[in-house]
Length: 485
Ligand code: ADP
Ligand code: GLC
Image (cartoon, rainbow, N blue to C red; front, side, top):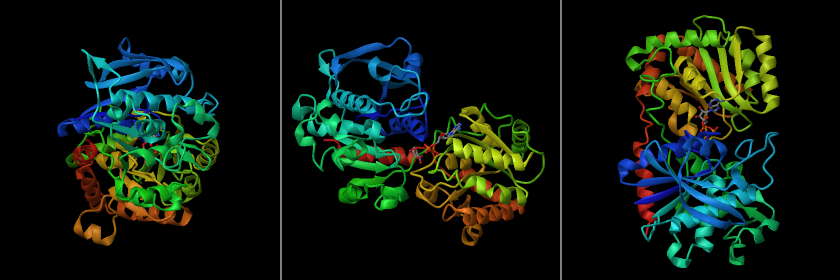
């Protein structure tokens, strides 16, 4: 079974969020299940730089109006294809926005072309030794790849033969890729695609919508989020379509890369440890206190590693800082995003010198050191399709304190009396992202902290939990087989 995984990010080549971790891990997750995953990425400068000189295996004279080449390389030993279209992807700035944070004006062309190329590749446009290299299934991630499903449905390469079955995975309903109707004539789809069952969406063109409508199967990254997106709060306008797709929609939890995220062998940590040597975490905690300019004491050190956005509830965090410090806690935060949230956090930190430490920016190594030295990680998300930082927290014995939503609800076992009595608690959950709920959760966390044996038991449970890709890799493989012809 050969699957083309189409994503606009994948570690270690390009990352703005958890999608990259997941797309980067899929080939390794599927290999034990007899599925060969080839990843297709846009040729962003960082991607081209990393792969260096690679072989061109196909060229388009005009891919929606621009010349493009397909480069073949390997990443971590797995096959990688890169769409080198300089007019679309070779530019300074971020993958979706310019240096000033504005969406690129031609995102519609960039990601339509990416989808068109993906559909061609799945249909066998690359010919090797006279044989078209077809794929059995195309797996599109998020709106940036979702148009591939529409091209496969309405304009497959070479007609019916090229109509490869597809899966679309929704990593986040908040990003839908919505554009004006005027782009439709430029993206090479027949007029038959301009319907409610195709790419049309509220008078414009919806790329994620197109994926949801055209793919043979739809997945999201947790069972709870798969249910939540059937309501308007979470479906964000697409709930009707999600409901209409019925059993074609399912939730498959993300796993984590247990080689990259293993506290027993993590080169980023001052002291490596296991569930049996939790004491060694103290060294990491001290190092973190120094790094963040925090007082050294024996109270709990909370951490946050997050995009600073409304989704992540980071606008409420500044409100609870006084309470967090009032109960004897400290906070080390690493984040990037909303400038207004940044300012509010700075104001809070200024009120509490030595108790609140902040780092703004993106720092992968530091995020590891924080999981390895922090006592508890705060994740007050308003919605969370899956979430990875709570899984890293669990693996590192950094206890997740999370809002009960999406993947957070599915992966953390709240330390309620029943769970404590049964010896299965792995974290703290709360309902509702507002001051009262969060302050109460912090107090409850402190109470657990004050009973060292209970706390250590929760840490051990957390570290024992299996969030490897084993089960989810098998679940994707079953799905691919179900839709493959
Ligand atoms: P999302 O993709 O919605 O941002 P996830 O929890 O799925 O949320 O994934 C976020 C990923 O990005 C994790 O790997 C997390 O460690 C990482 N991350 C988020 N913010 C930062 C940051 N400022 N520095 C380093 N890593 C970060
Ligand atoms: C999105 C979601 C996050 C999820 C990640 C990977 O960025 O916000 O919850 O973990 O995708 O699936």
